[in-house]
Length: 265
Image (cartoon, rainbow, N blue to C red; front, side, top):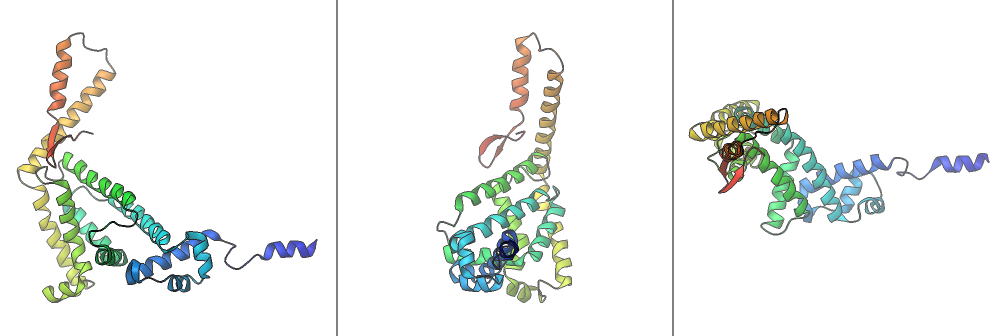
């Protein structure tokens, strides 16, 4: 009996904590993909980085593409959480995104490798990633409805522009150094670029578009308040009240991205 208990308690190396082993594999894979891209990454190198047997990697993730897909999904979930935490004011959100880019250079390198290797072709796990991209655009639309961003600008182009302003120096550190004489990691450049981003934020929030989006936001709040009042009181007996309400709701609709959209939703 004692021998049997001892045999059961020993187990094989690497199988005592599957969660920890998978975490090591994913971290090692992220580093390898960021350094060499999907095509250049080697499963042998990932296994060595994770200090595990290559067969164990295949056991948990199947193949290199499945591993890459899981790395992407974890990273996208993390960045979605950061996106939700983005300040509404672009004077704060742009420096916030730049700070995240400086702290997450491997993610930007991985995307650069992907651009080189896949170009305009179909991406790995594209359906899931399209959902994440759609959610990012919707966050911009909500900020436009709140009056934080100009409603005159296409939300998709605005998102691309904001990413370009905040990610470009990290994605192309050699150009940053050539143009500014400073490395992207230099605290002087970081402070200077954050100041620049706060000034650039006016391009996204000031002018007639800002006033228009603010007006839309106020109309949304009025409709929501009217809905709460109706919920706590009996319905209006006159049909004219219904028509008036429809007209009020229609006033909250705004032209966004070239199509009519109810920005209250």
